[in-house]
Amino acid sequence: MNMDYIPSNCVWEITYACNMHCKHCGSGCGEKYTDELTTEEAIALCDNLATAGFRVVTLSGGEPFMRKDWDLIARRLTGLGIQTNAISNGWFIDDELIQRARASGILNIGISLDGLPSTHDDIRKQGAFDHVMKALDALNNNGMPSVICTSINTKNIQELPELLEILVAKKVQRWQFQIASPMGNLLDHKELIISPSQVDDIIDFAYDTIHNYPIIIDLADDIGYFTEKEIKIRKHAVGKDVPQFWNGCNGGKCVIGITANGNVNPCLSIRDPKFIEGNIRDKDLLSMWNDKKAFNSIRSMKKTDLTGFCRYCQYGSFCLGGCTGAKITLSGTLYENKYCSFRLAIEKEKINIEKMTDYKELMEKAGKCIEDEMFQLADLYVQRAEQLYPEKTEHYDLLGYIHFSMENYDLAKTWNETSLSKDPSNAYACKGLGLCLVRLNDLSGGIAMLNKSIELAPQGFMDPYHDLAVVYIENKELSRAKEVLERGFKVSPSFKKEYQALYDSLV
Image (cartoon, rainbow, N blue to C red; front, side, top):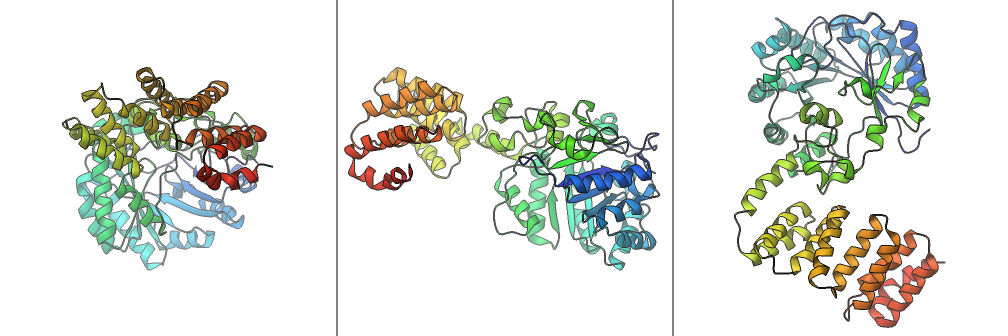
């Protein structure tokens, strides 16, 4: 097994057959595929999923309950120890179906609800809303957990407060929000696509809800990221008293999607055929997963591939622009995400900062932001200071540090070089440039600059000794690391006291 990527969750569209033709359906479901997996092939796929190590499978569609053998598939999965859920439009859910689901081991059934009666029925089908209400009653009566999934669009976003009251009355435990993305049928109804600024409306509503109502809000992967409210919503959803940070798209890393005819892709929100990794009729899942070239566009992505705001965002190294499906459909690129709450917050702050003119205030605010590790804001404050007072030099060192902290090594290199162009004897800038060069794979150049920083270092400035030693340690040159530390020990007794343990560990 590829230990870098451990399989966990799978969403499996077991059929494209559907009794509705929803305006926002991403897969454009309606008629059953002529090459849909047979019962025998579906059962074999269940075994394949277990062998590959997947632990959770969600049965989707189309409408999964239109496939006659849905409970046979579910029973096979749960018999193999795989947690199994289903997502439905609710039309067929009644007491009998719930009993079949329970007997097959299905843990819960999520139901799509996309607005108040007129909106939901307009998007889906006349009478669809009433069927959802009846389905919720049936789930409650049979003691099965109820989950509502809402694809948010321009029509239903204003209806969320009224929907909330209905769902609380129906004792719904969880409510998931996702953005209706422009793919499939929604390409013919682009008027339903929300604007980037409305992401904050969703987050604000969710935040207020979890503090005032007995319901859990789950933000799908396309809603985020990194604002205080968004982090607290995710924390509330998992029920753990620790911050919950978005950790990047899991498509092809621990999650896959499987279509009704057996095609495998990183996620069912990614419909572009070029992302199909293969078909289970041709290759088993474990071999597909462990292929070094598998899911390459996602697995191999790095921060320097990103563009626009995302390229230099302080969270870019692990966020990588957020949800892959959202990037492709909502922003039209794999490398940037315009639907990001953190981005919106920074853009708003930038407008305010550009009105500031007091250098001391700008630098003080930058310092506080650095202290709080709010590097993106610190960058805006210092760059404004540099714009107003280019003759001052202290902000160039600061910009180098800020961008190094955000892993923007190319920009940090530029700022340190700018600082040195104004003062070639600046030991701090030499150190910063040296570390940037190391991170940019110029090891010899980086070591040379760190040594130069040591030569220029004023009394008491011991950082370059430590940093050069660490560079040698990272490159397994332990004798050289010890030599650098010994040089530092001769200069400063306090440095020796601080790093004696590190020196002793270098055996």
